Length: 224
Image (cartoon, rainbow, N blue to C red; front, side, top):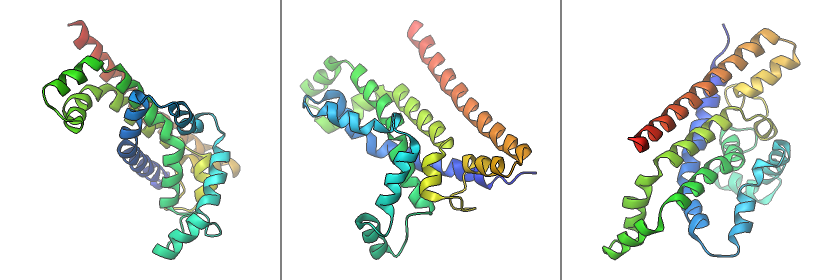
């Protein structure tokens, strides 16, 4: 019988990361999709950089950023008497940065697909920008929102390099399922590594089956 704590920790990390990114990405994705600034290309490039950077590079710089030897980590520790490196909050921060493109890209694409005419009609009816955003735009974003949630959760479940760099391998705190697999492979306990791998495969497959079912349902609605 394997210890399910690393799997549960991975799911907890994925849930925190997905929830935080949903909150912080909606407004930036909207402005990237609708803004006319020439800086948008640069901003979008920076936000999606984690897609192409090696996780160890991202993890290394986040580790330096959160370290008490550097200003951000020092300020946080002095204010809250808590060290972010090698802690669960630390790997949440690292995971949010690393998984950001998986949330912001689907949201941006979704906002771009909304007909501008619908927004203009809402304005002519006297609705404010905030009311239009909440009552008109967000209801049309079901599929992009679900895609962003699913992709972010699934990606975070498999994160390894960033988590290991920032959090290490501390049981109950930073030892996620992917880190546990690495540990058991290192000690040549392949049977246990197989079990954790199969669990992650099962979770990921289930997530994408649900996503495909939802997408298929949307296509049927359009046809009907």
